[in-house]
Image (cartoon, rainbow, N blue to C red; front, side, top):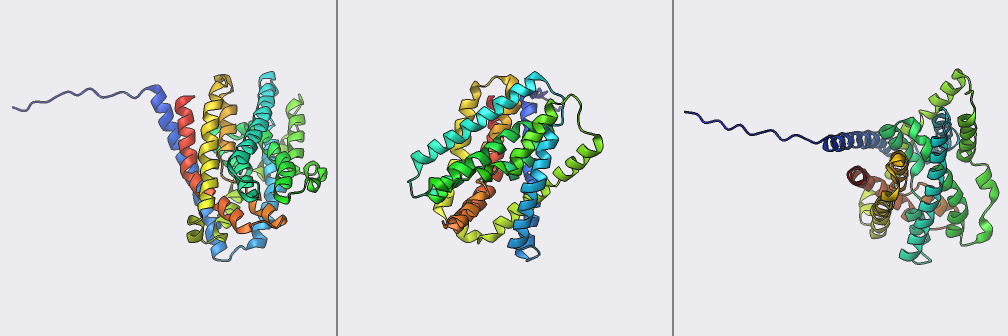
Amino acid sequence: MEIRYNVPKQKVSPEGEAIMESAITIFNQILKMFLMMSVGYLLYRKQTINDDTTARLSNILLMVATPCTIITSFNQTYTPEKFKGLILAFLLSLAVYAANILIARLIYKPEQRVEKFGMVFSNAGFLGIPLVTGLLGIEAVFYLSPFIVCFYLYAWTYGVILMSGDKNSVTIKKIVVNPCIWAMIIGVIIFLLPVKPAQPIMEAVNSLGSMNTPLAMLVLGAYLAKSPLIHMFKNKTAYHVSVVRLVLVPAALLAAFSLIPDSFATIRTVILVSAAAPSAVLAPVFAQMFDRDITLGAEIVSLSTILCLFTLPLVLLIAEMIW
């Protein structure tokens, strides 16, 4: 006689299902971005693209794709709640960069300028926009725009002083002419207008902005290909900066942002993604501009970009569980 035991099936709570769905979404988005980065890596290794090509693609990103993505995100109906959220996102962005600068001063020596730059500035534009768009939709870039604007404000003031060692190196022109700052100004005007621009205009802007993700991933892949992987993985300094940027900073934000009400959940998630991104591509660019260690800057960017494929999903999953 066969005895059968009816073991009750364990039901997964709605919260558990939500976390699992988020985990799958995050993994799929990161995997998609990694595959596109791999194409950029192979194209550079096969010499289909070179440094000149990468520089030109970066300029297209800065001058066209990213500004168009920002403008597109502002093409939505005005509400007082959204406007308050935009102000909150701007204030939080200012606070995050100020906190990063303080942490960098506490951890690194005055002469460790490239390390400080790599720790303070995240790749919010190249990596943040594709990830936020994939996870939360293009509308969420609305709250990411202040972080990108703050990035350029701090980069062309604090960043220039840090890498040059000279306060007189700061020029207001570099800030004023930045296309991302103008994109946010135009975006805010569109957001406040009761009548939006004609549909063909916004569709054209949206189409140009859609280049942002593939172009950004190709450029990042090319940057990864510039440094020998073996040498990069042996660089203890690059590991140290990457751990601070990808682990310490997000951990502090996870604790601090717990104080933000759930009504601003999208904003705190967007800022967290931006702040938990790898080191900014400007690190080797500024290092070259001000005669610093270019190789160190490139390896910090490359290593932190690879490691973020593991740390960023974990950070977002923890945020999903504790917030």
